[in-house]
Image 1 (cartoon, helix red, strand yellow):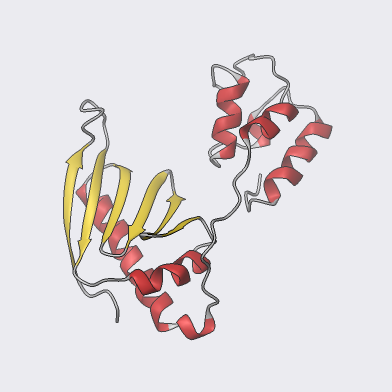
Image 2 (cartoon, one colour):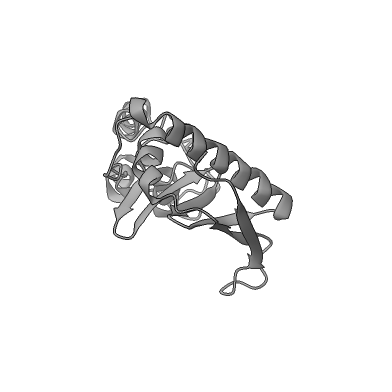
Length: 174
C-alpha cells in the first residue's frame, strides 16, 4: 500500500466567500509522485504536468488535482463529500500502484476540445433555448463535458453528427 494516511483541510474559496461550495486539501503523509503517471494512464490521460508532477481531472463537476504530497478538490458540498472523494482516490492510487506492472505509465496530457471548433458547428443564434446566454457559453460548457449536442434544440442533424464525431475523439460520448 503506497498511500496510507492523510490529513484534510476544508475551506471556503477566498475569491468567492459567498460561494455555496467548499474546497479541500488532503495533505498526504506519503510521497506518491512515482504513482502519478500510472494514475494518469488509468484515469484516462487528463492534464499531466511533469515538473513538479501532478495530474488534474474532472469528476462529477469537481476539479481534482493530485500532487506528490497533496490532493486539491473544488466545488464540494461539504466535508462528507470531500472525505468520500479522497477515500475513493486513495483506493484508486493504491490499486494503480499495486498493478503498475500491468499499466503503461502516461506522461502526456489528453487533447482537449477547442471551443471555437464546437462553436463553428452550433447555430450561433444565441437563442437561449439551451439555458445559456450565448452559443459561446454553450460551446465552453460542451468543451468541458457539461453539455452535449442534444442540449442544443435548434442544432440540425448534420451538425449534431459532426459534433458527436468531433467530441468522440476526446472521449466525450454525446
